[in-house]
Image (cartoon, rainbow, N blue to C red; front, side, top):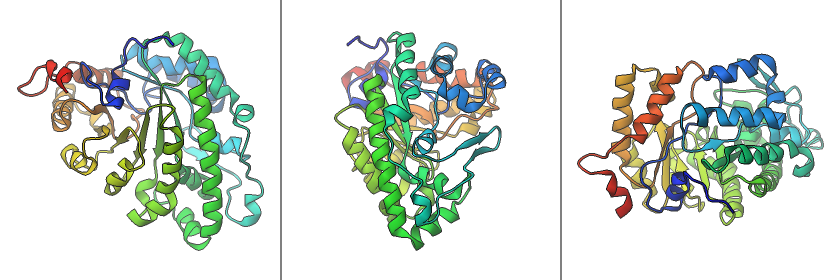
Length: 354
């Protein structure tokens, strides 16, 4: 296997010494890049996702233009729901829409555990092409949505701030909810295994809506399924687990066996480290809206974040996806500030002595 030339992300995930803190950004291949907007105006969303050459081109844009330390495959968490037999539309500037949501036992008969090679082959083709075009410059991150987050869209039929319909469904029809969550889990494990086979170097599991559940319900409806996925994947590839808003459950997230826990901006790095212990890496947690600050202010805030996390076992990232109105030079300033950072009173050599 060819060696990745810039492998500091992999080293950090493994807890090995690296020459500096690695940096990438969630949703880095997207609407803030003018080159992406050109393709968006030409092709609809799922055409971009399902055409390997387009997905590859979009995946590489931030590596070429912003200088991030990893590529993340351009795709969408909802392709799994499409593979499971549901219609998913993506309405530009509005988000996902499922015309036939799943809310009853009769609805469940429409949901299948698919053959992922057959239904999601275009994703694996995009991974193979992206790996070839990356030519071992940086690692490629694959990803999937956590079962709870996918269930939210499956039941609600669209985005929501609270997903009350989904929560009501889980609390009033727990048996059906768990049946669906298990089907989603099995599909996700098969999907991620195939991503690794196609060539991804790391996987991230996104639980975008985990923070909507109480810690007890988070364990019942989300964590137990993410645990199955992480356990299935942990010997195959390094894993990152990101559950937005669920930082009350950091010790439990660490307990899944993941290599890294992603954080949103709602928790101080020092607090997160105390809760997580030293056996895992932490990723995050810059507020994406902060990228709109004037560049000198932005650099100051990034430096503050880096010093709060300290050197080693930290991957610099945002606390959620980059916003579409962030100027490219601000995104680049974020990345460059991380790359050039020297930790307070200590030189870069601190990394080699970890």
